[in-house]
Length: 115
Ligand code: AMP
Ligand code: ZN
Image (cartoon, rainbow, N blue to C red; front, side, top):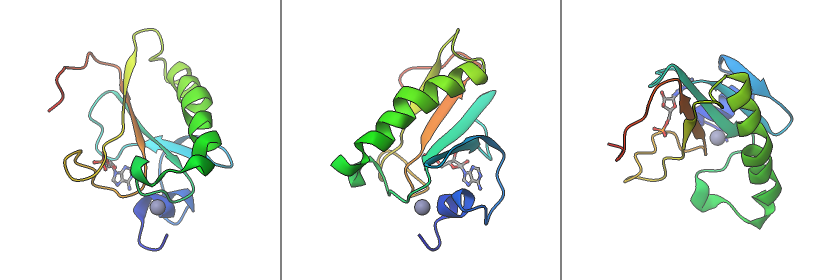
């Protein structure tokens, strides 16, 4: 989608520090890391948020959650101690980039409740 920063990252128009990539998904380091490990996992296809997902995306979401995230957790060595997977959505969720992304945060102990 034109003017979407994450579409531009997926299309290599904007550089990123990628840690994983396949045909459907790219994961890259967050520009402003909030933890020692902070990567963003995104579908290459533009989807605005979880609210814009449909039945057609079941395989893609299954791929991200069942395959990509566990692999990344192992590769980034946060599987043993755990990590947090966050999907900010909409205004109250403080979603700033309107292209669905999963924050994978780890390498330190997280607080609850979130801010
Ligand atoms: P959210 O607030 O959930 O929409 O998260 C957007 C995230 O994207 C923030 O953590 C930003 O630091 C991150 N971000 C924005 N632009 C870039 C970029 N060009 N490369 C990497 N991360 C980015
Ligand atoms: Zn996009």
